[in-house]
Image (tube, rainbow, N blue to C red; front, top):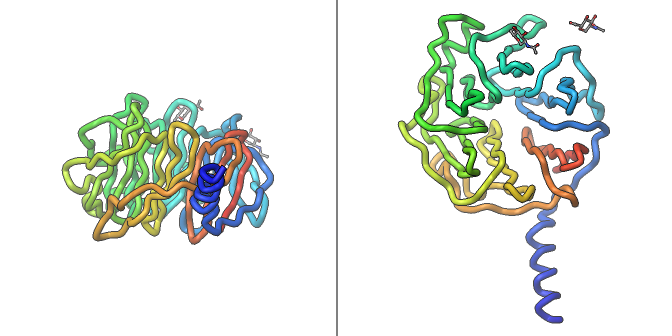
Length: 253
Ligand SMILES: *[C@@H]1O[C@H](CO)[C@@H](O)[C@H](O)[C@H]1NC(C)=O
Ligand SMILES: *[C@@H]1O[C@H](CO)[C@@H](O)[C@H](O)[C@H]1NC(C)=O
């Protein structure tokens, strides 16, 4: 009995770290937040932007959406990449299944074959060009996300790989990945450098101890936002946005 109580108390302490969450109406499979904008896509590949407390649909069909210092980008059903410019999504000549705009104006993404590419700030800011000098990083990842000084990815086996010393002029950073313990299905780096992840058991975690001087951090801290499991997570300007396994959306502070 005592053991049970202690375990329960531990769980409560472990999970209830002052996260206050509210449900935002809607249903999404993927969400990304950055520079104050929040967007996502649903199971029908419709794109939504959060306006106030409501997700409003914009009239494009995409399977993935990202927003951050590098702009607003999206991937269509045949893995073509688009960047939002001058009021419309313009095609970028590269094939990604997932793209990320969270770095210091660099673009990063992974191809359907899990090859990893990034684009430096100067090239990104020229606008869509067929001469883009994409940098290929050795290795394979199924999901890749960048923040101000590092990029985090997961591979098909769920291993977590971190690229350090990523800068606007050197999106490839250090010429190697650090491997972090754990088994994740996705990892997201926010614009302030904080790192959130969902593991292969649908549990939600934050990486502790992450800083510019220690980009790989120290450990994983669990949070319980969705009673029936977590599907996708993103963080921006002090707000955590979580998609639950059933597609429902929660915003937490
Ligand atoms: C939405 O986009 C489709 C295809 O591009 C177009 O035919 C349709 O008129 C658009 N609807 C609105 C309300 O803009
Ligand atoms: C995706 O975009 C590319 C480039 O514009 C286009 O050729 C392709 O038809 C699009 N795929 C879908 C499913 O709309």
